[in-house]
Length: 483
Image (cartoon, rainbow, N blue to C red; front, side, top):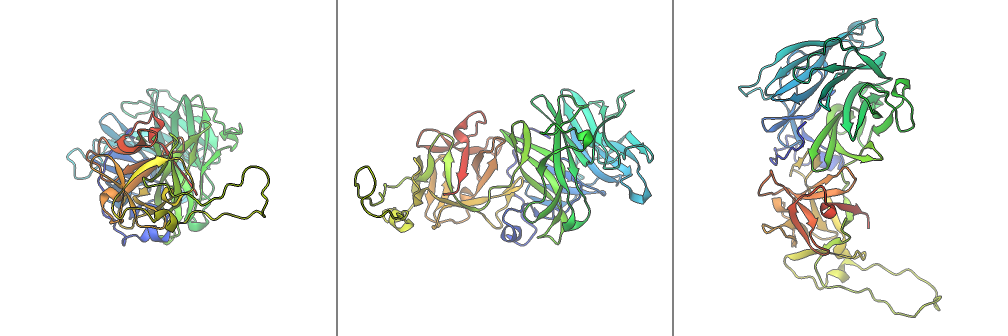
């Protein structure tokens, strides 16, 4: 997966406008994201591809609206894809899985220089069989997954029938290294994936049951090791060879049965993971592609939801809260000194929007940052915008002062203002990406240069501006807190 996917095109949704956002605000992906056993998402010729069980897959221009179209010969089940040099290598399994009464299977590999069927560089070439099971041994050679780390190429494979295994491949040709023997690394899982981070190898696998629609119990779990060959342990020290595994993600909201993890590294401290839900209750219980934020805590990957619609205080890591730059409106209060009250205590009402907004100007209002004081001009409502599209698993949103239609908007000079009304213009649409540390990056959908995107940052103690995002600085990191 390339470290940075900086495309900004937005494809038109093929579903009726706003269908998914209206029925399930935390669901995601528009178009026709129907797939089972999705491969790791890769970019080719300016578009994003994933392949599934069967012969095809999905393609997208923005990671939000997906349609069918990719071509993958060979059929079989549960492929994976990796780019090595100028070639895309696809591993897939033929046979096994208990289908047709057995567990005899072969993992095969082929390559092409483009995944776009209309490209002159499109055309698959066989590498050959790199792993197999004879139907009697303690393994079922399906569900392959690649990992390129520290200059070496690995392939994991297997299911609940016996052990998960790993073999080493040639990182130039993806052929099995001569004399390399498979090593057992886990049990009681399938649909594995591999990651490498900070000296640790992570083995992710799917526990539970599949292929039973909304009754599927699929869930993604993980263990880690200092060696690609194991031993892999979970966060309680239980070996994956004894059935261990720390939960990463499972059923959530209207999505049932999460399986087939794939890392999506977008660069600049933004990681997401792709997978499928066995059943999307808003799409007739069909199996669908999903993409969600991935964060890290204490050295372990943690799946997260997209930011839920609602009203928030937007707090900079620098210390200030995003707010309208308006005159202070004080709350009425009679000072009676220190010590116990002489009158019965009572609740004080919070400042109302009407009280706070009485002196606001009618037109555009500048936006700055200040100490959070639980005031209405510091409260922002965030909602997905039906029909506006999105970017890599998250919809574009509008950000308005709570209880009003005053919308946060980007300006050509890099300032941010509150426009008098939300119009749906691109400068009023925002992309909110969760970073791996759990904070958020806020970016306008309208960018003059998509290859050098701008993000909202605290360039001073009270000054927010749109600047090039610096992942090493806290200036561009924000948190969202319920008032």
